Image 1 (cartoon, one colour):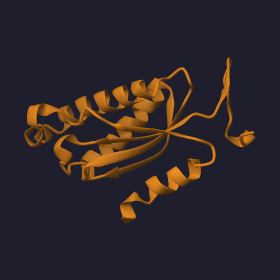
Image 2 (cartoon, rainbow, N blue to C red):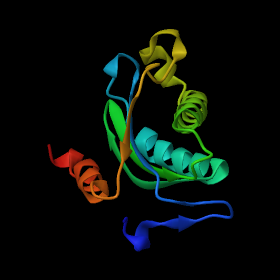
Image 3 (cartoon, helix red, strand yellow):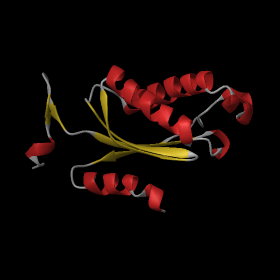
Length: 136
């Protein structure tokens, strides 16, 4: 049986659902630094709050980001990615117009993404992996 401390009790279910999500900047441009990185973190936390999922851990690299997210089972992981990439991309390109010149056709994110479900046993391993990305 799973660890009771990780279970979330909702009105219609009890769950422990986590996702490791990675998406990359178009053409792997190294633009997620400084003020852009700071603003991206703010935007993603706001998106998570508005769309009712939780960012447990986030690590930005200059050309990609890692998210460890938990969400109610009714929230599809593709929806989490769509909202995170869509809203953050639109706002960052609006707030930092110089980014548009670096990115062909004005898209911030690559269309594809990596998604992995995270079970109770490997949750800490994934968190540690994400948190240690900067040291590599």
